[in-house]
Picture 1: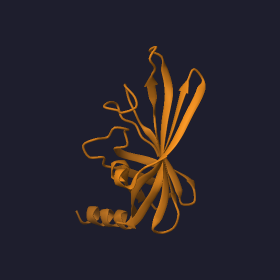
Picture 2: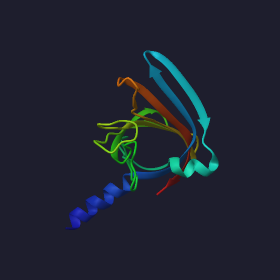
Picture 3: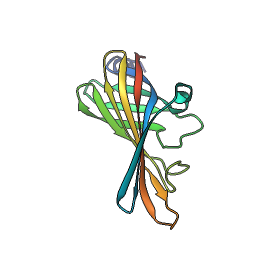
Picture 4: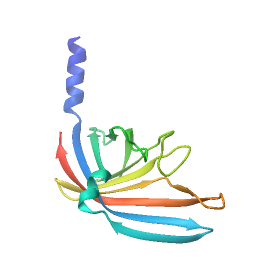
Amino acid sequence: MIGTLLALTLATVSETAVEYDCQTEKQLLMRSDKGKWAYSAIDVARQDRETFRYKFSVINDTDGRRSVTHKPGILDAIGLGGTYEATNIAQGQFAFATQKASNCLFTELACGALVEISDIDDKRASFSVTPMGSVKMEDGRREIMQMVMLGTCKKSKS
């Protein structure tokens, strides 16, 4: 019992946790139609940013591994909810891919996204979320649709 408590205490001390509270500020929409691409970019109005807000809890292990947890609440339309192992892609920058089996906004059978977070400084980071996307055209064929969400995060240690 004491050994278990000591091991849990050491494990807790050896990990650091950071919270990222992120809001989307810009959305890029790209869509193919028979190999021709259309795209547009919009700024997300301040009053609408709460709709596109994501909170990520990041655990940094002493061996350099990171795990990221997102609790989406009731609606998880792009499949971000869950705990995922992150890939360190540069100093202060990491990415992770998500996956969900149903109830998706931009797809029918399953969904997920690529999320990248890059530290700006000790209190801020930039982020991008790129959900998987598919659109059914009027003639019944499928085409690629991507909506990349870009924004900034407030960082805090938990």
